[in-house]
Image (cartoon, rainbow, N blue to C red; front, side, top):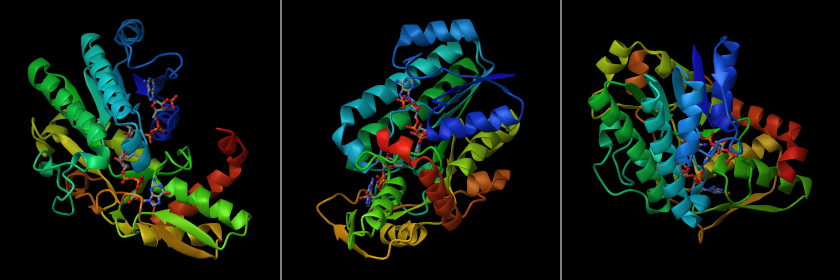
Length: 318
Ligand SMILES: NC(=O)C1=CN([C@@H]2O[C@H](COP(=O)(O)OP(=O)(O)OC[C@H]3O[C@@H](n4cnc5c(N)ncnc54)[C@H](OP(=O)(O)O)[C@@H]3O)[C@@H](O)[C@H]2O)C=CC1
Ligand SMILES: C[C@H]1O[C@H](OP(=O)(O)OP(=O)(O)OC[C@H]2O[C@@H](n3cnc4c(=O)[nH]c(N)nc43)[C@H](O)[C@@H]2O)[C@@H](O)[C@@H](O)C1=O
């Protein structure tokens, strides 16, 4: 079995590639510099040469609320191109099974919580990440369309907000959890009296550790076809992945402050966007199939902070 992991240098792709290697699978990889997945001809010749048995599509243009809001053209263009090229060229080279990663932002911004898979396309999306969400919805619909027309077995998982070793700790473009780890750590180092978090602190998010996400991805990839099909529908085929619990951003900030040992004040910058007020996944579809998350948020934050400290020199140069 040879599995191509697209995006193996990223946080999630890296965790998936490590788990596959540990299980003795032959993992095929290319860095972004070696293969630009927005280049159709390059992706075609890669698949013609390598002919993997299966594909995990974890490469994407990824970022937090600020990056999504600031670079909308890149988020929609690059993600649509990556999906079109990888999914179509995988099909054209005879790949029967593929797993692609979407995101919880596919659901309408004011949807009933927790968000069920069948809430897809029932309302207006969150404007700060609509272009990214549209691309992710297109990815689901591509997989379903190829399955219906060509009989492929292409699956989609929708992760909640993820974090862990290998995350992006950029001060502006990252997601909230790594951004706060960095900000609280630097505030402690510099003995600052105050740390400012973006928005009102009231939005609620659900955080899943990347090792749990990698485990869930391989669980879904390896499900027998009849089990996957029995638990999904041809035109509603995606599966939510999360923990089933959420925290407010204020609560998250307090947890990160405690983990880093920061003792000063926490204040809010309400000129920054809140985004969606709550994003909590209904994870019953995956739970019914036998998977649940293992790493609690407290442990995950402490472990991620330890990883940050161990890699701090390299991360500061990036
Ligand atoms: N992180 C999160 O909180 C969440 C992530 N997801 C989804 O999970 C998946 C993995 O995300 P994550 O690991 O966090 O993201 P990362 O940014 O850590 O990894 C993405 C990887 O994709 C690569 N990549 C991006 N564009 C291209 C391209 N044009 N050609 C080749 N490679 C490319 C990147 O390479 P390089 O860095 O060199 O550009 C990087 O290695 C994505 O589909 C994302 O949308 C979903 C929900 C939440
Ligand atoms: C995974 C998901 O990620 C993005 O959506 P998001 O959930 O809004 O992600 P976020 O992690 O950037 O923010 C979560 C909340 O946290 C608040 N917040 C406080 N202080 C900081 C801070 O310092 N940085 C960031 N980024 N946010 C902060 C911030 O204002 C917001 O209220 C999508 O665009 C899309 O990419 C997607 O699918």
